[in-house]
Length: 143
Image (cartoon, rainbow, N blue to C red; front, side, top):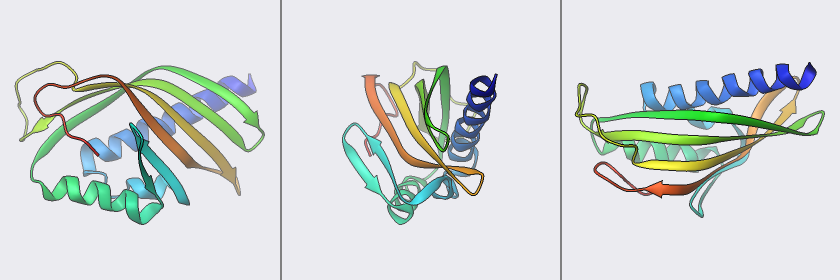
């Protein structure tokens, strides 16, 4: 039962993270990470909160963008009492502009792995890695 509750808790954190990215341009996304945490997209590594904040700031500076990150097939591995791995499939639907936009296929479907660590009772991201399985189409951008 403990693992199931942890799966729900970390799934909720993943959903909150992607909600922040989708609805607030990721302005606070860096706060989900440890100070030296990493966000890796297809081998491109952003290390530390400043680099992660800069990534989302640059995306926002490009102009209006609408995105929805959808996570599915959650899987939990408990590494230790204060370390867990959350894996899922992340589908990204995105394009430049404001809603309502034309419906199109996902521009990325990726294996997503997030290493969570807990300190003082609070979970934070040590490392988030997206490894594209499918990508392309209108609206696709690279890190």
